[in-house]
Image (cartoon, rainbow, N blue to C red; front, side):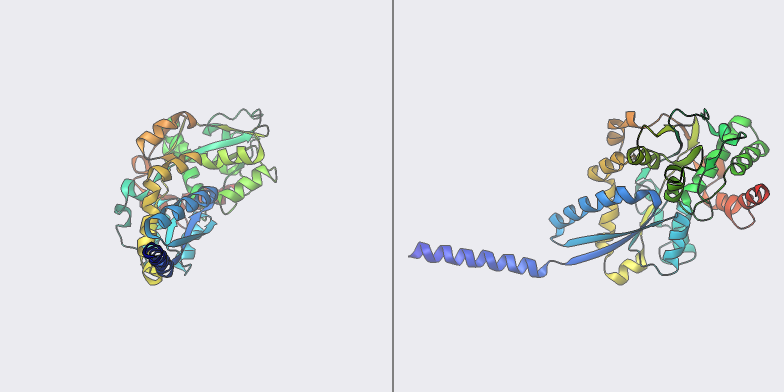
Length: 337
């Protein structure tokens, strides 16, 4: 009889603890505002993080996504889109959350490793199977009769990387600013339509069948091969391209208002974990973790990469010179229309 009551008491005590745990567990929701080609990566990453956070804290976390051209996404957050975190295409767009929105601190990029860029990428070419126009490098994109698809640098972070990659190649190979500008002018003369974001350009090229070549993120090119078939398209890696470093940050004022600071911070930190880095590599982003990168090195093209600091003096200078109203992009695109 004593044994019966002991078992009964133990069962009641365990049930009480379980119910108490359930009662204390929270349901948390985050909004990650990101750029176009990260959709598939974050869909998988969000599940991994939710599992990790449940095991760590007991709380359920749901992450909602918003995607679009990086420049447009930055402006949307400044205008009131309630992002707990942003994972955007380039430093300049994230920094506008401080400069124009006062939503994050000035030195936000120092809070995580590698200037808060947990993975990298670069810009490559997607061409039709067999490469009928024999496109091998950036100067081929400026040849007569080649139709180029690329997004609009005014709205797309990836498009700005594309533009600067072509300009950097021109400087490196042709040796002068004038020659670089001539090459980029020829490329945009061959671009009949500029979509607002990278994914829109992929659809234009792969589904609408416009263009001979798509300039795009390396990971987006691999996704297009997977989605549409290696029998339709192939990837061409240029000899020289830019090291694209997409940064991330907690949007402090929004997270504070939502009470999500801790989980939002952990969400971004987990990108640097072995799990986060492996998922980045799986989705064709170049991981920062040296061991993970070495494991997947054969999956990434061996391209000579330059940084925006090395060639253009950083994003503030590049934005002002090339992409501000009246800048070189406006001059070039206006001249070729």
